[in-house]
Each structure stands twice: as structure tokens, then as C-alpha cells.
Image 1 (cartoon, rainbow, N blue to C red):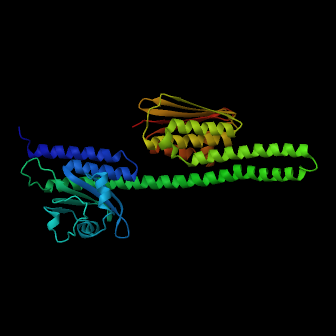
Image 2 (image 1 turned 90 degrees about the vertical axis):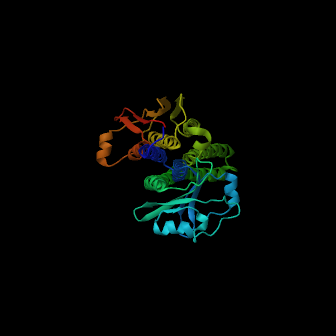
Image 3 (image 1 turned 120 degrees about the vertical axis):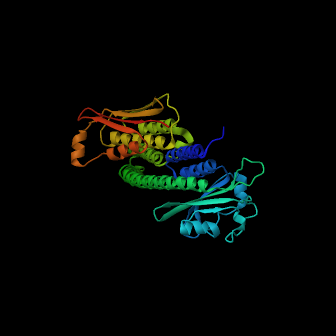
Length: 385
């Protein structure tokens, strides 16, 4: 039985809905761009698709393609400039639907390795008056062996709907990346402060002790030997402090080693660098989305920092366990504890706001249990993906 126009339109709207859901799952700008391009190409059954984000210099800051192999893309050469039909869409925010792009007076040819394209559909991606980019589709696939298919007005309407939601997804991804940049800048400032308080002080003590040992070498060799042993001890402590800071500064280890190995390494470094006993255990954890793993790592770092720097804890236990499709992270210490209500009233947060923001930013929750003299337990749960 042949489907009527209503059924076809319903299928198209369903496909748009699926594409929108796919876009909303990503937080990184590059991932969002790739999903938009792949969704548009599949939705409208095109052979080629691309999405360009313009820069302020007549070129493209980002240009993502689908349907072109990596070898082909490398052979094509530099990114296109904003000229011809591309410029028309970016300057006027006007959709372009052409039966044969090669016959358009604005067409200026392809690079030698560029695939040949005929029918063309372009749609600006705009947020109000700001043009964020443009989606380009070419070579509509035709179910009839005789060919002759072109993009239709219905195709243009569907792509317009997709472009509206793509603008929202792209704006959200940009805001997320900006927020993360600000968070990283704040963490770098905190690390610089820690380096000054911890490593710099130890290095200063190391220098004074070395000077004292030098002065004692001739007249009191035995005491000079004791001072040199102190130099070795201070150097080892400074190295451990610096190593802990460097590990904290480089979450890129997540990409190479995964969350469990990265967190275990950091706990081992902190256990050596501090008098408190710091332990780690992991139970049945499955792979999690990258954003969730980074958020769990950062919350663990903040909670460990509070326990070791402010709570005078003698023992800190870190556990990471599977919970349904997600995970639960728990950092419990036997330190001095605090009254969470009093901390809020005093306007002091001990990083709690940052930790809660990280948890909620990846769809998770954060709870803090503490009382004066009773230690502190920080628990973060994420749903997985």
C-alpha cells in the first residue's frame, strides 16, 4: 500500500525529532556540529552534507563534512572561503535550493579533488539576528534508477526545522564550553595558590637547609650530614606536592587511562604526599560519558582537597561503584567536620557550590553529610548514558 502525504510528513517529523534528541545528547561544540551534519544528511537522504561556522576574517572557524572520506577531505585542501553561494547564505540568512549548483551565476568552481555536486540545499543556522553557521546538502539520492531527483520544498521545510534546533544545541554547547573554560581558569588559579602555599614554602625551606649544610661541612660534618638528610626529605615532599598538582592540572589522563586508573593514581600520590591515609576502591564500574567522568574526577579532587587541607583528616576513603547504568562516587573522611547550614549562612562554601554545579551539569546529584567532630562524606551520583 502506498503511503499518503500525511504518513510521509509524519515520518519526516519523527526523523526530525530523533535528530533533535541526538543533538541534545552532546555538550562539546565539535560533537554537536558532527551530529547536526550527520542528522541532516540522513534526514534528507543526501549524498553529501557539511556545516560551516564562519570566522571574522572571511573564512570558516570550523567546517564539518559527512559523506566525504578522510582521504578525500585531505586531498581537497584548505577550508573554503566565504564566497559565492556560501557567502549569500551567511550574509542574508536566506535558504538556497538549487536544481544544479553548477549553473548558478554565483558558482565559482570546485577544487580539483572536490566531488562533483549538482542539486543543492543550503540553510543558515541563526540565533536571532546572529548567523551561527550554515548547513549545506548536495546530491539528493533518488530511489528511481532513472535519476532526476532534486531537493523539494518539503525538504527545505524539514531542514529549516532542524536548523532552528541546531542553533539551540550549538548555543548551549558554546555556553557549556565557555563555562568549562571559566571553571578551568578558576582551578588553575587555585592550583597556583596551592603551589605557592605548599611547594614554594618547601622549596624555601630546602634552600635554607642546604645553605646551613654548606656552612657546617667543614666544622661539624656530622651535623651537616643531618642537614643534608633533611634536604633530601624536603626535596621528596616538594616533588610529591608538585606531582599532585600536575596530576590535578591534567585531566587529559582520563582519555588515555580512564576514570578508575586516573583516580587511583591521584589517590596514591596524595597518600604519599600527606600524613593522612588515603585509600581508593572501585567496584564494577562501566564506561561513562566523558563529561560525567571529568565531573566525577573534579568533584573527587575538590573533596580530597577539603579533607586534606582543611579538615585535618587522618583517613580519607574514596570509593567508586556502579549504580544501575551510572555510578556513585563517595569521599569520606574522619576530619573535624562542619555544619553545612552554618557554612551557607556565613557565605563560605568550601567548594560545595562548584561540586554541586558539576554534578547537576551532567545530570547528577551531590549530597554532603557532615557535623562538627563527625567527619564529612561527599557523595555524587550520575545516571550514566
